[in-house]
Image (cartoon, rainbow, N blue to C red; front, side, top):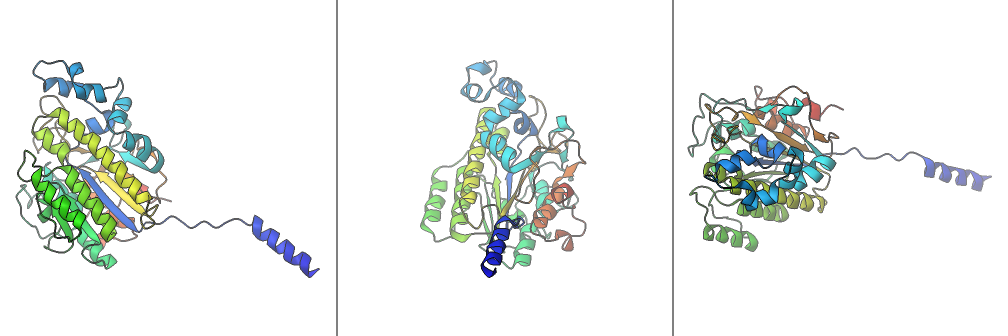
Length: 366
């Protein structure tokens, strides 16, 4: 009888429902693509803009047309950013900002250029009365990166910001030296030999701009920092989608989107290969501002450019089941990024800045 009871108990255990651990987030990553228009994100190659940059030439004769043209917006955006659209947004995340679907993401600030918009993203507020230029200047508003360092009790290497534009040295923190920052043509102080080699190479391959380096080095330095220092908080700020647009090189702007897509693929594959980050990392991807809507003003942004207030925002998290494109929702603003990023870690950014934008509620509704 005793043996029979033991057997029944074991059989019952085999058929009992398995309790699966709830997904959790231990790490957060913010990625921004500077000046990345919704036209390209949701529609791929804009042939009207390409035609306008050719001085009467035939768009169909260009390499960029052959690589990225397709007859529908959905096909074009997939050719431009295949990993983002075919894998990341289908299997792991979602994106807001396609106004054709009733989805709006916009700036809260009225400046509609980079420093005010990055400050809005990182501080949760627009500071239109104070931040009125792109000057290399530090402002007294604490950022979400500082908040997370303090709340999580992290050392300076486990919160990190890598950026293409040198002005991020001032943007990302109200206090110098708080955490790891490397932006623009800046030598790395990390003794790691790979970091030192990358640091040397960036100065040997200059861009046309004095204060912006190639995204390649920003990305490579950030990836090496991930591998060596294991940060729980990372900000990756890429810039060539804006820089080539200001240079009126639509071909290279489009190519920058494609390179950024491949960098996102490499980042994601690395995260998913590592025990610390696999299925334990939330990512927000967005832009600082839009640009003009037409072939005449696509290079421009600022408070007098219609369309510069239009943005997009994508989300990847093991705790969020939403997939694909958002539709018919209340508008989202860039000032909600900071509180949303901290909410993934069950922290409240509003305890630091009560007037900051609220977390995006749809991501946390269960």
